[in-house]
Image 1 (cartoon, rainbow, N blue to C red):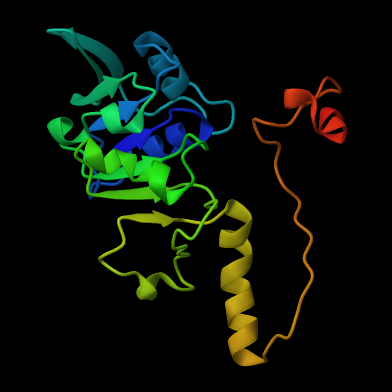
Image 2 (image 1 turned 60 degrees about the vertical axis):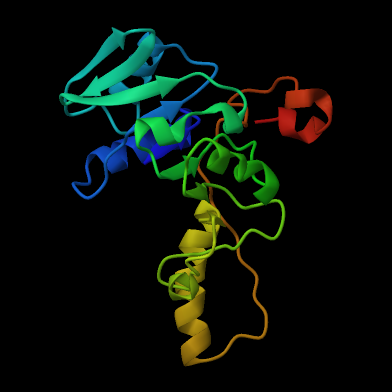
Length: 203
């Protein structure tokens, strides 16, 4: 698999994939993070603690690699998804975790680089099919090239709602979510990101 965007979600996807013997991470793309900083970000995590393995770097013929537990992961720094050579690295399934390419037309650009399928790690902005494991994953069509795994809130609520609806029936509902702090929120009061949502500048 390949990972586009090595922020919070991308790194956690990487950790989970590296712990799964059925998955091989072949490439990572992030235009804003250099190789050495990738090592630091993957190795240390305030919540999930120090990575339980070895992480090193390798540069060969102008190509960059993260070497995790002895396995080489090719690193790219492309801004345009279509320019990422996923196929050359052997990455067939791409986790789109930048939070930017959440429309089918944009996410499909990964296919031009040799990818076969794209999974958006956030809710899509258009009619991209959404699948939640345990709820509707059996409806997945092999013809889908781009899919979404919905949001973290949806993945928490949907399985419970499905059980209640199938057993008793639901007409409508109301839910409140207690959510962890995200990278777009401020921990102390300050100017809101972009300056449009003034309330968003309040912690």
